[in-house]
Image 1 (cartoon, rainbow, N blue to C red):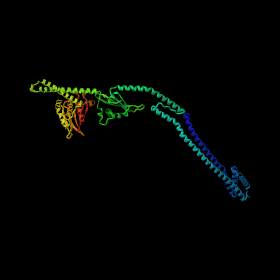
Image 2: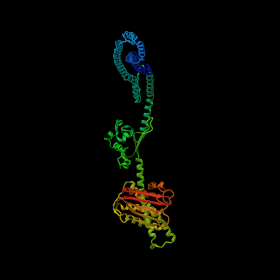
Image 3: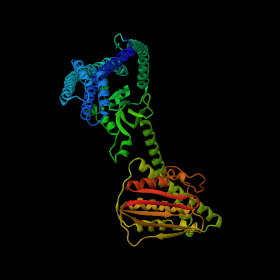
Image 4: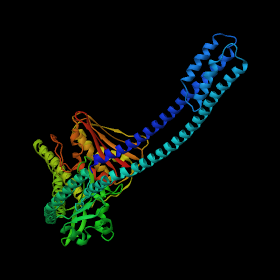
Length: 573
C-alpha cells in the first residue's frame, strides 16, 4: 500500500472514531431532551389545568366569571389526556361539572375536588416515573459514552504508537543507508518492503549504490597508478622527505630518508613520536615542528649528519599542509612534509671562500704594511725634501693604502665570524670610553670633511661588560660612516643613554638619509645603498651586526630621506 493511502486510512480512521463518538453523544442528548419535553408538555400542563380549576371552584360563589374559567380549563384538560386512567377521571369530572348549578351543595363541589386531586395524582405519579426512567437512561447513556470514549482513546493511542513506527521504520532504514554510503560502504542494499513510494526510493538508492561501487572499482586502479607514480617521484628525489598526517603518523618516506635516518620501511604507518624514542635525528625533526619559546632560531640551524661517508649538512624545511574539504570553505590542517635539503656542497664552497679570503687578507696585510712604512720614510724630511707634486702623490698613495688596509681588516673580521672563530674578551668598561675612542680615531677624518662632532652623555649611566675592542670598532665604524655621508660644515651627534637594564649608544647625522626600503638590507654583507658615492666594501655594518649580536645586543637604524640617519646599539648593562 502506498504511503499516501496509509496516511489517508490512518487519518480517516481517527476521523471516523471522532464522528461516531459525536453522533452517539448527540443521539443520547436528543433522547433526554425529548423525554424531558414530554414531561413538560403532557404532565405539567395537566397539573396546571387542574390547579386553575381548583382556584375557579374556590371563587365560584363570589365571582360569576369563575364558572367560565372553570369550563375553559376543563376543555383544555380534555385535550391533554396522556396517562392511563386519566380519561375516566376526566370524564367523571366533566359530568360533575356539567351538573353543577346554583343549587349544588358543598358535597358536590367536594366530589369535583376529589376528581381534580385524582387527575393531579395521576400526573404526579407519571412525572415521578418518567423522571426515574430519564435518570436511568441518562446514567446508562453516560456509562455507554464513557465506554465508547475509552475505547476510542485506546484505539487512538494504539494508532498513534503503531502508525508512526510503521511510517518511520523505512525512513530510519533509509537514513542508516545514507550514513553508511557516506562512510563509503557501497556493498549494502536497502529493503523497504512493498510500500509503493518506499519501494521506489529503495530501488533508486540501490541503483545509486551499485553505480558508486562500479565507479569506485573503475577509479581504484587509476588511483593506485597515481599513487605509485607519486611514490616513484618522491623516491627519485635526492633529498630526504618525510610525510606526516595531522596525528604525526608517518605516511611516507623516500629511500634517501630511510638511509639518512637509519630507519626501515616498517616505520611507515607508525607514530613518529614513538619511532623517535629510538632515533635521535627523528626526535630532533619532530621537536622542530613545534619549537619551544626561545628555540625558534635553534630549529632553523643546519643539521650536521654523517652521510655519504662524510659529515654532511642539511637544512630542515617544515611545510604544513592545508586542504579545503569538499563542500567547505574553511581550510583544514592535514599534516606536515619535512624536507632535508643537503647544503653540504654550499657549506664546502662557503668554507673554501672563507679560507681563501682569510689567506688573501693575511697575505695582503704584509705588503700593505711595507707600503705604509715606505710612505712614512718618503715623507721624512731627513731623507730629502719632496716637491708639491710628489707630496700629493704620496698622500694619494697613503689614502689608498689606508683604505686597502681597512678593507683587509674588515675581511679578516668577517672570516672570523663566518668560521665561528670570533673570540670575545669582555671586561667592564664605561660607555664614554668607547665614545672617546671613536671620536679620537675619526678626528682627522672629521676635520677633513669639516664636520663637528657633539657628544651627549648623561651624568649617571651603567657600565658595560663587553669586548671593548670589538664594540669600539663598531662605534668607530658608525661614526666614520656618519662623517662620510654628511655634507660639509654639518654636525654629528654621538652619545649614550640608559634604557631600563640596557645602555644605548647612538650616532646621529643630518645627511641625505637612507630610504626605508633599505633599512634591513644595509646590515647584509656586501650591500651598498644604490646611488651612494662613498666607496666601501659593504661589510662594515654586517660585521658590526655580528659583533653586537655576539654580545647579546641589537643594532638598528632610523632614517628618512633628507633628514639624516640615527644608528643605535643597545647592549645589556
